[in-house]
Amino acid sequence: MTMSREPGTWFKSSWSADHADCVEVRLGVAVGVRDTKDRAGGQLAVSGSAWRALLTEVVRD
Image (cartoon, rainbow, N blue to C red; front, side, top):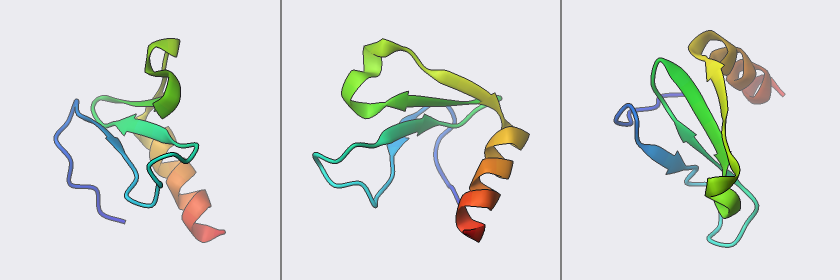
């Protein structure tokens, strides 16, 4: 999986439909994750290594 996004920019998966339940991701020193429908509701921040581990598990299944 290749992610070529500007660090610090929130983006939504291209697999997400316009009205589907989904999350947005922001790449940087820490990876930010937030609910697209509740952007003001807060965010989860994880390390880059934790994010890579999650993606590895998701892609593997």
